[in-house]
Length: 174
View 1 (cartoon, one colour):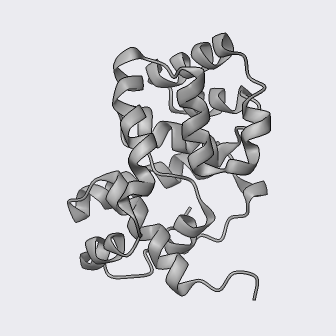
View 2: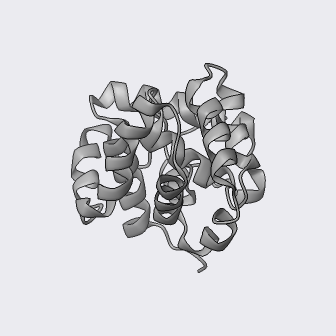
């Protein structure tokens, strides 16, 4: 998988600043440290984090039993196996690859990007949701971790920059 950042690396902070209201991240950002320390998400936390990514999936997400949410997120947040880490989350109703990535992004101890068509586009990757699989995820994680380190920014800052750049520059559906 070949990724190529569509804007100069020295402009990551500039693009991240264009992301918008930082308060948008308040709920998932406050849940992350608590979930990390506890080792899993509670149902209310799970619903709040998944709502941040996709409000339309909430009816399906709400169908998950609290015990199942706890068990699945406990595995995801404790394993060192990268494939298990992401794919176990897709066992939860309403959780596909992008939403699973959000749970890891805010709650895992290791840095993870948010899997989003905008962020992928900003890295010159036009993968469709149907193309999301572990090979893409593994390459995307490696690329964004490397890029964040190289640019001296957090994964959240990089994620905001990738999203904002696409929001301004990408023409969707035209």
